[in-house]
Image (cartoon, rainbow, N blue to C red):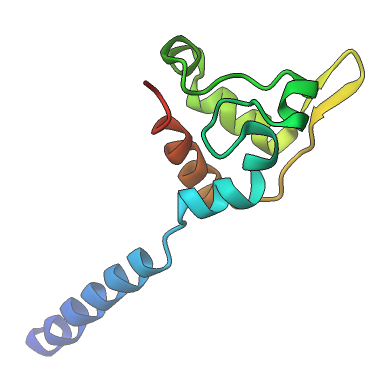
Amino acid sequence: MKKLLCIAIPAAFMLALTTNAFAADGKAVYADNCAKCHGDDGKGQTKMGQKLGARDYTDAKVQDDLKDADAIKSIKEGMKKDEKTLMKPSELSDEDIKASLAYLRTFKK
């Protein structure tokens, strides 16, 4: 039993370190997948964002109204309005989606 603990504890520690090392970088995921429309600052004032009616995520009310579950669903499934595609479905991992959403939350003023 003592040998098992001597092996299991360091192994668990290394796994924790490795998992954190590979955790999604929300800022990078956002920059690569969201900023084109939503803007580097989250205001949605890019050419594409204005065309598609992207919301201003610096606005506290907009952030408060945005529920994580709804945001995750929109990212995964995309968004349409009157048969017009506003946002294509994403193939991002759940971890990347959550990380980018956490980063988006930092825009709230």
